[in-house]
Amino acid sequence: MTIDERLEKLTERHEALAQTVEIIAGMQKDNERRFAETDRRIGQVLEAITQLGHIAESHDRRLDNLEGNSR
Image 1: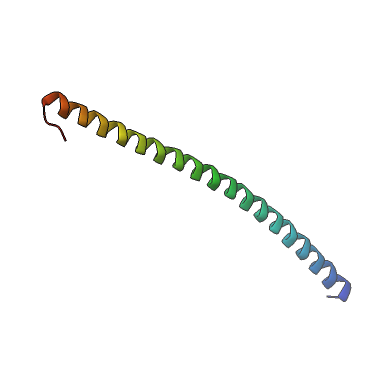
Image 2 (image 1 turned 45 degrees about the horizontal axis):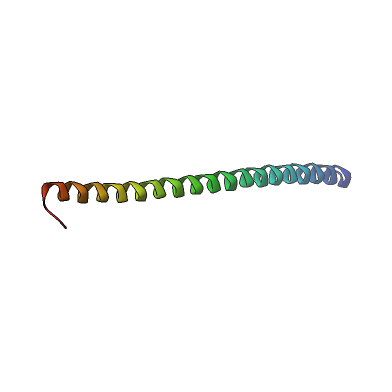
């Protein structure tokens, strides 16, 4: 194999690696966006659960008051 052939082969490998890095970088950006969206949605779910907990406590106190058992 001549030096020119080796250089050509190295150039092809370099280009292939560069393309792979670009693809991986794009995938990483997509994953970061998805994780950010997932975190946002989890935050909304946790907030809703907290609100439901407050509502349940309020209803529980109301039922106790209706039954004459004040807390």
